[in-house]
Image 1 (spheres, rainbow, N blue to C red):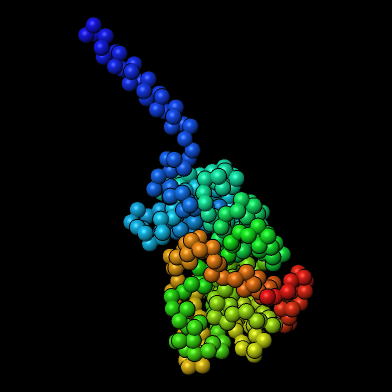
Image 2: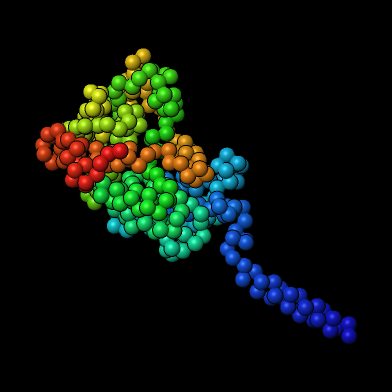
Length: 345
């Protein structure tokens, strides 16, 4: 009898373990996601692991020391793709998969699978050509969506994204991280330099053959320009050289704003904002500043950047492209609006 006792205990323990495993297998993902995956309602999905932005956001959000600073949001899952034909982007994906997996992120085989595991989405795909198709899946699922720059690779796709979001009542916004530079709100409010009367901005403007020029990288500096100047640009003139661009926008109230896009020398971002009472310079930016705005957006559903401003940025980019193709002749923003049958709000 004594010899059989350990065997009986083993059988009993094995039976209980099997029953427990069977029960666990029937539980939904949410039941054992735990704090590492984020609380229900605060689970973030990332689409696109072909950009360093995905890594930066994951490192901030899934940092055990983040505390309540980011309201408990965590990256729970990621769909890696992502550009497959832009080598500089596609080559990053295998390493970035490993990096986010180390932070507890589950890799999915499709966007549909990802949407079943998360509550809100960061569309980070570096390739703007994919944004319309990928955004449509998220919008149809009814999940709040941040679209990293560029919102798309055409104003046509950008208009379609915002139209679908409005019809489905899904909050969406897009932005470059450069928009939220430190101290910008104080400048825009007039407290620091009074009314803004002009601005010059600069950023790298590397070109990619698959994209309209400034959608690829120059959008950073263009977005900085519109952050300072606001909407209302009327004409755009682009002076193109192989290593540099200078784009001049004239606003309806007579103000002038310029963007200098660089493709030689050190890659820097910045600018000067001219005010009635003095000037201010653009300072350093951080991914954390943008992420703070995204989290507030996820909490409230209120986009910090109006769709109308993002669409005017798209029109500015396409006017600059047309000016280049026309040998530097000025292009009316109204011409771009008419082409897309779009009426600025």
